[in-house]
Length: 288
Length: 75
Image 1 (spheres, rainbow over the protein chains, first blue to last red):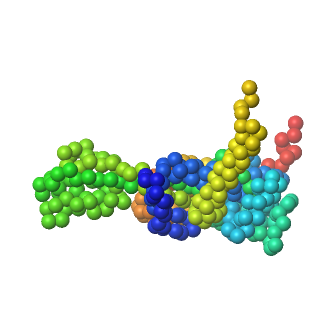
Image 2: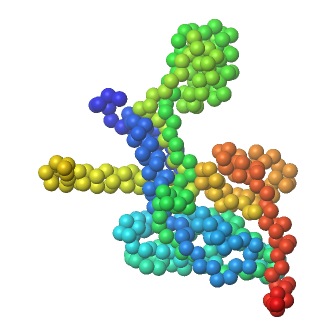
Image 3: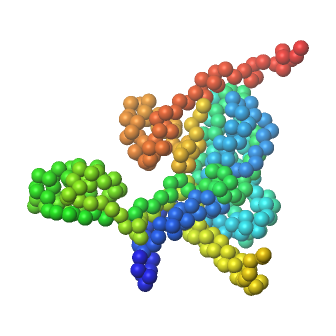
């Protein structure tokens, strides 16, 4: 990486659930800190406390509470800031859900969609009412046999993935370095055909008997080609540019998770800087 | 017992896709193609479906709530 070169980002795919960006002029350590922060440092809502009044089901209270906790909860990205401030201030901001289902005539499946949002309890002060909903209404929680009843109150709180996987806003977050394929010598047509069909990712193509790299982005540097034909190709990668994938479970759009993670890293770095400055301001000498 | 809410490995949401998967596979569709359709891409999530047995249906047969009066258990 040249010192003068600056970071460049290109968006490849941007949907609610998934963000794919190409990053150039970066370092693996930087991407990795973003990845780790996205997974474990972005606070979201998840059910944290369950008060069970009646549970006739075949499932134990604990197991049921665990399943409830894993149900992803969604708030509007604009309302999210209010919750984030609430979390950072250390106040208790709790979203209350109620579930009351009974299998009257036949077996009934209780779904996440049966959870009824009652509102916030505690310190959230919003200009308008914040609505929390489940990401998917079709998650089966438990099945009730005829005559069984389930009655509970569930309280959702903000938390981070570091403490429990239920607060993890992301599924897969990963980055892949840009592959670098060098063709060392011109192969014969036969060799070129064999090499092109050898590659499981179909990176190579033979045009007029010549071997060309057709689809470099597909290469995952498995080096199958290099192992078989070390005299023709060499495969490496450039760790200063990468493709960064981030996949959301649903509580926030993928781009929002990444931006929040970046904000959190920035805050932490400036906090560290202040601490160092303060320490140096005190004379800068270590205590003896 | 019942389909897990999330994939054990990556944490993506799978619970809501189970019943569609089960219905379509029991109608004779190829499990792999159904999973492709549902957007279950990684093999960690795919094995959650392929290796799952919905055993809660069998356990439900052995529940006795409502059939037995409390007095019957009294000493």
